[in-house]
Image 1 (cartoon, rainbow, N blue to C red):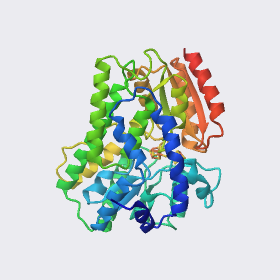
Image 2 (cartoon, rainbow, N blue to C red):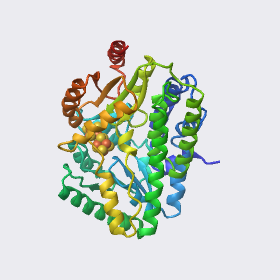
Image 3 (cartoon, rainbow, N blue to C red):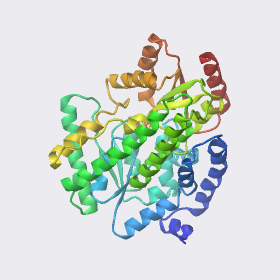
Image 4 (cartoon, rainbow, N blue to C red):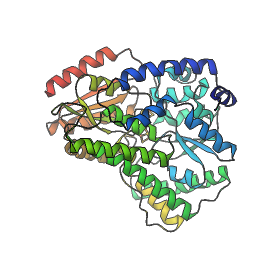
Length: 423
Ligand code: BJ8
């Protein structure tokens, strides 16, 4: 049996502090997840992943590195993980979603900065995240200003490589992004000492497409009324996708989707038919950030879709699999990734189109716009989203919050009033 304390200590972690971090999780998980009535049985796997969040997968990463493999940490859905894996490395998502890490982040970053950035940097500085400790290279990207500058600070603690993401979507931006992906490939080959061949890249493109399709299949079931799976559970599945083994994740997600489909056939749901249906749109929710979903769903509404990077922005659009040469494959990757409609782009009309499409497809009654505090891109873009939704008579409310629990009571009151209005 693996001695995890030894494994963590070998990774250079602060064990005492780590104990404090992990001791709170079971209680929170019990309240937020395990007390939900009528959950699909296939969620057991995802419960296990959370229960063993710092052990089972970490042991796999350690073993991979022991055999000479590399691990890369990523913070954004724009990073083409297919390339990392085609070079024999493992990609893990590192975005911090816990308030526990924020004070450590504030040691080196301004307080009035997005909590996702502070928590991510804090996770590294505190020595309490075994995923960070297992990484050979961190991959940043030039999305928002906060992240862009945080990489410079993080670079003092770990090797960081930054991808330059264009901020517009003209043909010349696509060409620049394609060039950036080529540079990225060269850096990953240098790190791993492995050449990326068209054969290996084709395999990883197909695998990541299958992972996207598994999530898409699960999301399709959320269009039903009554909805067969809670928004909290669906969010957890997407969060887990960022660091789980992709093949295992696909199997488990397909099993969950099959169970959800069977539930639809027998009319079984986790909320009564007719419960208000909510689309959450905005900034990502990194694990264990379940705050807004928990508030909405304990107030009697169902979150049926997330237009976020821990939702549809992560899995929509496939990479074209017909490319046979590296040239063609890199072009296909560049085109697919540039379809993501993050607010860091200007203009960003595709996001509005996505929101309308999802509102219709998921039969949404109201939209809750989730904005992490100090995320200016999404905060400013609210103007256009609100205007467009109101013009179509779709109720919308904006929630601006961080990872702390201080405003939970106030948020609950606002969400309840919004739901009352929908009813
Ligand atoms: S593609 S949303 S994952 S950048 S860190 S932008 S919340 S202030 S995470 Fe993102 Fe990629 Fe865009 Fe998606 Fe705002 Fe915070 Fe910046 Fe953030």
